[in-house]
Length: 82
Image 1 (cartoon, one colour):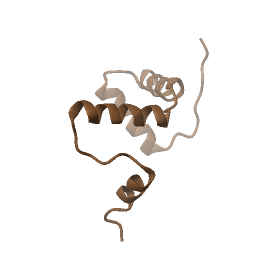
Image 2 (cartoon, rainbow, N blue to C red; image 1 turned 90 degrees about the vertical axis):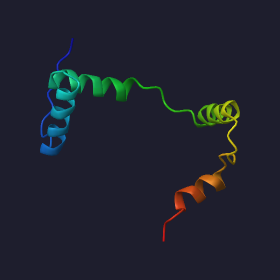
Image 3 (cartoon, helix red, strand yellow; image 1 turned 90 degrees about the horizontal axis):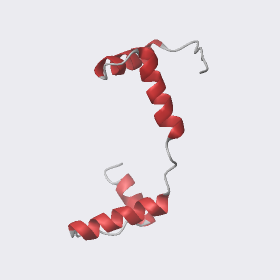
Image 4 (cartoon, rainbow, N blue to C red; image 1 turned 180 degrees about the vertical axis):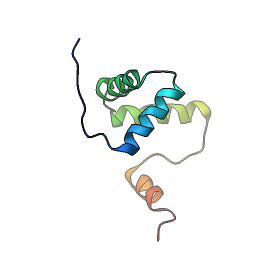
């Protein structure tokens, strides 16, 4: 097993890691390992598959929502902005 030394961690980041470690009853080292694993080992999001899953969920739940088109998403992002 390899060892990594991380230098220059900003105080706010260290405090957040320390707080998360305490919340999850882990050591700081274990918490950093979990964060790295989740970040590096995660499968990349496939937008078309995600949208297909969302559409299938809408049909299953019989929600009357408009389809997630580029125009709809753009309007949703801009809604309420000046």
